Length: 341
Image 1 (cartoon, one colour):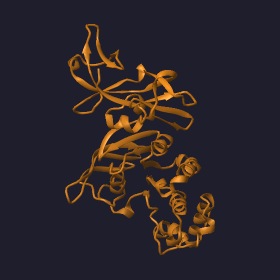
Image 2 (cartoon, one colour):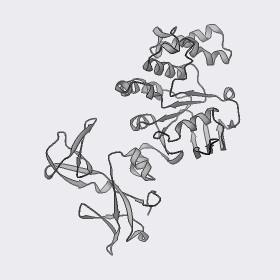
Image 3 (cartoon, one colour):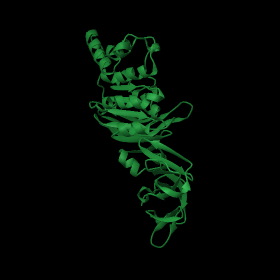
Image 4 (cartoon, one colour):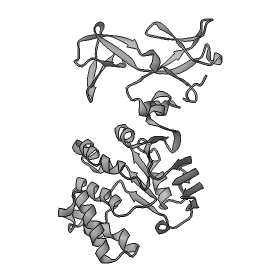
């Protein structure tokens, strides 16, 4: 198990890489860390691995405090965004290095590396030097490290960014079963991709500029996002409008598309503005012309009057838009945190 207690990373020039991050991940569990560029995920993983010093907080592995331990004293495997490949060494030498450091006999190293190379499809390039590798081969070599040894913690730092854009999804789906099969280690999987986070994570930690916005299951995050930042990352096709809350005597209401919707909202917000997040549904044959449409998998989405709505299988010229009442979530304008009632 890995446990973080209020882990904080600050750089010498004053910037904060991560602030007060706390979580527990047991062996056999996978936590996806979802963040945008400069979200803090890489700083967090490098601090856990010992590459960056912690400014505050603690890191525990199987109950032992490793916050100030040297890198080689931490039972951690970090699979780097750039593959972590030494360019002047062969693929074989790169893969053997952690075993050599741990004084495995040469024959045993060769057997372990050979099996890993076979499982990850890199036998033909074992004797190629790192500087000769293509981006997708670098990714395969990086992933093959997970089969070299079984540490307490395995961390992936947005590794599928190594894949060319056109084949990133295909390579992710190819290796997803191998990532899911890592049951003897705690797995932290950092990514900028929502699809990858949802596919890998038993739970997901959403980070935003070094802040832990929310940790929960994919279902919890989708249904009950704790902030606007979480909602934007987890529900990219929801709409967000600033609306006024009115008190009609029998509850609080908001108006969307000239229609009132009763919402669970604290009485203190009556007469105030809130951020409303909602999903919309489009029915063909209506009055409103669409400005654009796109597919996400088999789902068709249309843009109409600045609103994104899910539609039928084939695009039409005009639609009527309605609000999915169950999808409505409200956030405070100032803090952008979810309203609880």
